[in-house]
Image (cartoon, rainbow, N blue to C red; front, side, top):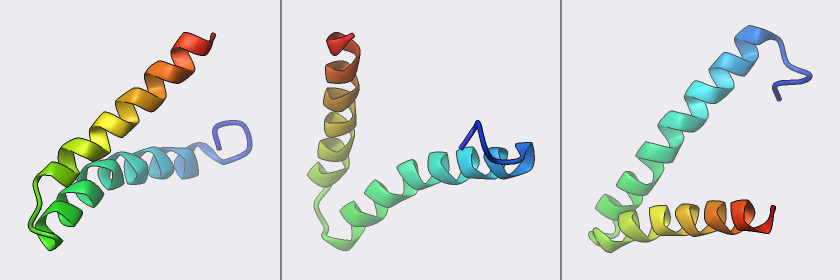
Length: 56
């Protein structure tokens, strides 16, 4: 995205992804009435990032 998109498109993409990463797990937790989904979502992101970092 950074390489091929215009600067305005890239900025919109980053903002959209950031907001989506916050609102999506919150809305799932509210919809299913299960706050553990919110924590599980971010634990999964954390585990995925640490795995990628440790592989380098």
